[in-house]
Image (cartoon, rainbow, N blue to C red; front, top):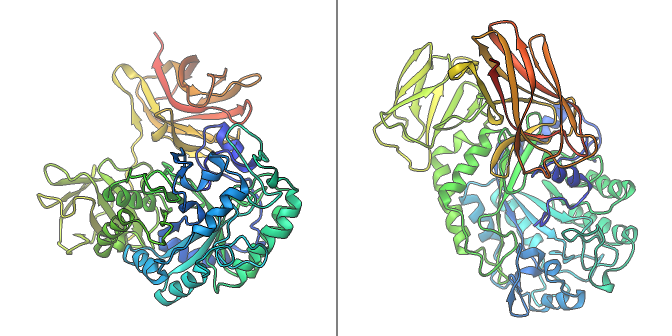
Length: 590
């Protein structure tokens, strides 16, 4: 798909260097121009309500299906040309064998609709340079270069209009391994690391002659285009980025992602193959994910995620305010693989009675994930998605509200609710109605009032403050690196990480932390503060962003008992980031 290597372009480099999995573009205007918040909210409304979409990776790469010269090729299917260094002419010959006579656009859209999906994004051109539509800019397209001779995007657009789904297009705007001058990237290589003399040329010519005309075609010839999903802005100049971005004006109301390049943030963050622990507060975002290990079809990849896991991913993402773009890789005959269809059907079966708890919801009101599941909300309603059914049938909900009504969403069975200073206790049936996730809906007469308690000290008066319990402000995000939950994305020295604690013992504390930091000149500097006390410290590299070590950094005197906020603020970063922080520990000094 998009990122065989996570750091394929300038916008991704900083992310990879600090251990980020997501693409985070720099601040900047949207390519469509400035707009008011009300205008943006109106444009984004359908997408925010949709929550669930279908990604389709389909192209000539489905013909080799992961095998070249009789050998299986590692990596993801749509990167086989790059992974196996297949010459341009030899790879192009696969087009003569690409004849998807079993392709049925209405069937594809019906599968997505039955799964409960509200939109589709399909690859119009991937990095191999093959256009899945009729293009005047290049004969290397499905209509002119294959025996199929039809335009599947035109047929898909018609089917989406008929069945009421939105349609968007993925387009690899810079990486193109077929047309001269197109960008290429190989692990450990350069942005123009070509393997065939036929790929040589100027990026300027490629963008002007291929990319710009083709983007104009897909935005002009297929009716309303809901989304433009850019990918891997390798080696483009500011002027080339602007030439592509300005084309979005051809589709008023279009939504674009953050992978165009340069300073263009686009509308959505695009975490790939993972769910950010706290979402992206203040930003629209969409996790894209495969059902097995590849985006494009590989005949022997049968490592399928269970339908229950995919369903819970959807719930988890919605609980953090994001969308789920779940991928299928159709076969060279034009069929969505049966294991994908079966999983989509199972998700749709769950959504039929429970969709009200997903569509049009906003993120959970709780700072951290609930131990027994997740939560979503709408005005006047709180939806509790229970993954782990309580053994005694009593569900503890940390809210101060007394609900007007508590019931199961599927079946509408009324539940007994008891309020106390500790929160709300719900009496549930003995057995879970749904083994994947049972949804409880609370009707409320006002906004949710979460009960937030400051951390009390452990035995001996110590505090171990973990990354997944922290309040985060600025660029920082919770992630997993080296099997450890940690605060990463620390590219902004003004970012802060903090915890609310209740101090019982006034005095001096030894401070220790666990961190990872890629080696760099001078080390990183940061400051820990509690009340009026401050401790400045400096740390050196640990070798990379996944190797964590714990170090004692000094002493901090806390002179007031009761509620206190402990914060960590970056002062100076080395290289790309301040550090990846796993935990902070305070122990009373003897």
